[in-house]
Each structure stands twice: as C-alpha cells, then as structure tokens.
Image (cartoon, rainbow, N blue to C red; front, top):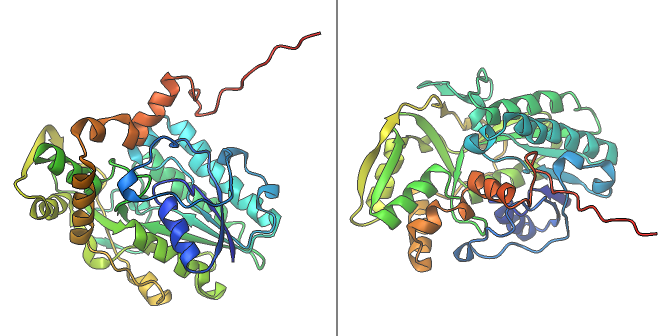
Length: 350
C-alpha cells in the first residue's frame, strides 16, 4: 500500500515508518516538524521519505491524492503538553484530526488509522476496562482524542474505513526520543542522578507498551480485512503490562545498578489511573504479536543513555521535553502563541 503517516518525524512516527517500509509499504509523510532539532543519535536516524512540511490544521484533500491509507499520529502528544493551552490542543488533536479524516475521505483514501489513546479511560480506577467501557478523560489531551474518535466515526461508510487504536503509555528508544513519558523518564533519572524520582505517590495504574509494538499494532490493523476493523477501537498493549507507577520504578531499579527510589516532596495521587484489557486486539488481529517487555525496554534505554553519556542537564533541558521545546520556540519567535510559524512580511517596492 501507499501509506501517508502524519507525524512521521515524531517519537513514534520515526520508528513506525521504518517498520512500514520493512513490511513492504510505500511511505510518505506529513509533519510540521516542530522538533527538528530534537534528534537523539543513539536512537538511530529518521527514515527519509517524501514529506510535506505542513500544519495538520491546514491539511487538504489534495495532500492525500493517490494514497491508499493514512496513519494519523500528528498531535500534541501528552497531558502536560496539551494543558499548555487546551484550546490549541482541541484545534490540533480534535479539529485537525477530523479535518484530516474528512480530507482523506474526499481524496478517496480507503482506510484511516487514528492514533487515539488509553488516556481516554482517564479515571477508570482499579477495574480492568475494555473498548466498551465508559470514556472519562481527565485532561485536554484525553478529551481531544475522545471527541475526535466520536466525530470521525460519523464519516465511516462503504468507501471509508476509520480505525481507532488506543495505545497504552509508550516507552522505548527512538531517533526522536522523549523523556516526558514514564519508563523513559524514570530510567533517565536513575542513570543521571542515581535515583528514581516519583512525582506522584506511585499508586496510579498505567499500562505501558513499547513503540515498536505500537507500530506492529498499526501494521496489523492496516493489513487486516476491512470487515475486521471497520469503525472499531482497539486497545494496544498487553494485559500483563498493567503496572502501578511504583512497579515501573522497581523495574528500573532492577535495571540500573546502585540507584535508589525517592518520592518528590509534593508527591500526591494522580487522577489518571486505569487498568486496560487488551484481549480484543489479540483476538481480532492475530497478526499483532508484541515482543517487548518493560524490563527489556528499560535495559535498552539504560544502554543508550550510558553510551551517549546522558547528563542531567540534557535530560531536564528543552531538547527532549515536548512542553519545554515548544516554549523555547515561542520565546525565540520561531512559533507564535498559537503554535503557528510567524509570517515573514516583505516590503513592496515601486
């Protein structure tokens, strides 16, 4: 298939593109490239594919002519980033996603795979939730994903097949590494400070999944018969990879020699707590065969951090933290407060 990946130069996209190519698909990209200066060398190189550098809020049908399927990853990527300005989050993650789906349908794209999130379940608590559970997001990010799913579903018909994949919290090495997600973050603390700093009390439940396994799930949904995926949601992860945050910290402690666990002075319970059932994707999409464990992922990260000589200044700096990087671009006038590139005006001469 000819596949357009929005957000192809992001944390997940830069890994997924390589796996799509390995599976024999022709890939092109669509990315505003906010994080062009945020590459992480030990994570490898970003696959070079034809890419349209454009804001998802401006996507048009002409941008998708000749495409068989769209994998829509482009978004403001997590709760802290989305809370920076909830209205812009809704513009990009909600309205931008609906615009992308509508443009894809108009362009004759047959299949639209939307990267939603297990954050949709928000405050579900200790009970296991599956795709039929009530959605109760607690952040602008989660709300934007829920609203996008609901509106895109209205586009489904005999010519257009939307699919909603809801990954657990991602982890793993990437050419566009992020330190603002739990396993990546805790491992970086352990390597650079010799401690694992928990900013909550460690009690919230959080399922986690490696970005390569997320990529495998999208490819399985891309290649499945349409009647198995048509207008359906799939949680992406593994049932035995639901952890309380303190359990994730313990995995890191067993991986990084000599580190200790510490709770931040203002540590408190996190309202986001959910345990997720991932049985449906294994039942409906048997081609999805995840291979990673958190212990293996922590070891991968530890090795990369050590080989690159990762420092605390790098880890806590703006390069690998999405909120801080956008704030830096705004401060340097490379983006305006609406996350738009400033228009350069030129004077007219007679």
